[in-house]
Image (cartoon, rainbow, N blue to C red; front, top):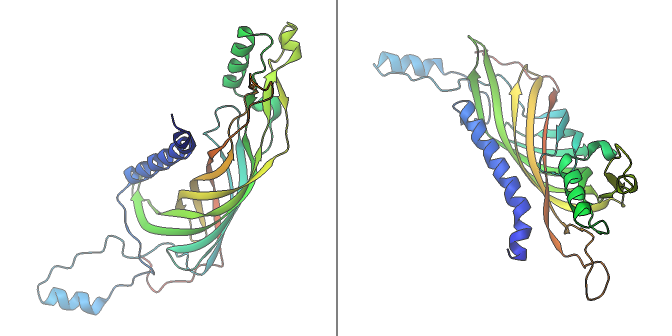
Length: 295
């Protein structure tokens, strides 16, 4: 595979995950385009149409249960980075947004991922280290464990879809679907895992993994994502959010030695990504203005 192909692989995987999420949303319910403001019925026009014998077809969504325009949104969230195959990477954070209208908002997403140490190392990492050691006890193999430690992303949010779904009985849940695009800054941990000395010495029950930490690296990132708000009341919604944070970083360092120089092999740069999925509760302030019609 060409270097360009290797660079595009992480982003392609994240975009496929985003596409799958979009299809799943579409399968939940029929959706309709959003309107910029709450619509009120024109009784005179409807009466005139009925008098003239014309059939009046109701709008798919006559009125919005929830209005976001000119309101702030605060959303504490918790989630996970599912595209990290080597360590568990839970994420917590907060999303702050201001809604200019029902469709357009600006947001800032602030993320923090705690370091779990050896307890967060996945079995795949342990298996790879064991295979390398069993093949050559003097191996220089090390497994890179790049993971998200924190970051901030500033984005434009656009919500073109507003809809309603009826799940049980007469209960109706209002929701919208939005997309985000913007820029951010990530803090990436650059740890590596090597075979532990206790494991080499044959200590019974020894952890095969020994972690070597390195200074985190800051990286500018491109943010692309989608999300859903399920409105539970006129001030609170359940938020689901998925986004890929793509950045340029050094390729994985497996500790290989250049046979000609006897030095570690030089590392090229490549396109990498952190795919962050979160869920949380959004709180909207100030209180939503009352409407003339409530239906």
